Length: 279
Image 1 (tube, rainbow, N blue to C red):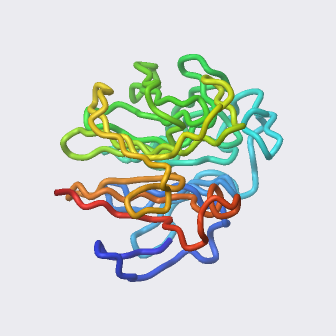
Image 2: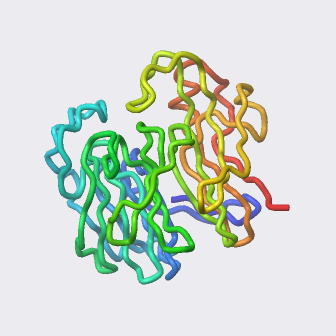
């Protein structure tokens, strides 16, 4: 975990001997504690801001049996208990946790503040309450659970108890979700390349650049920006995570190497993290 000030100046880092190279999600709770999700060792951890571990959910290296072959989410045959490559965590005001699980599962897990499993929901598929790579999760100001169902090209919305409420299908391969104080919804969207296949939209016939979409709490699109000029400042290569701070500034992290550089699509020095200031 690398800590910067709001101007991007390095302050400190910690966790070098804790995490795998697949550390995937991070959140700061209302108690200012730091929560991380590591899909490489199948754990969720809680730390003090200084990096002292105070709770761990999951046994490192131990996975649930879902039929996952270790390569493709399409191989997930059934949902299972925590965890099989979990992806993200959201922390409620009362300290309860919601975890998307993930690359090797098709489940959302709800935990108490002390890490006790309360309930789980979801299974592989394309229907309501079914998932194909639950990737990002957030809790809206009106206390609903929003989950990015990445390979199904949609966002699913649930009550805190896991009751299905709604589905937004006018998004593209959503990877993460965040909210500002005014109730706006920010969604990062990964690009689709020709030859890939969406579980709900079928084969991809032309390149669809990644971007960021801003919506209201009813799902109306307020702003959407993306461009085929991926390397230009302010545009995106492969948006993978995002968050909004207390001032309304937006931060977007990208998997630039995996989706761009390694495939010869962008330069090695292409941006992988950008900040957008609220005006």
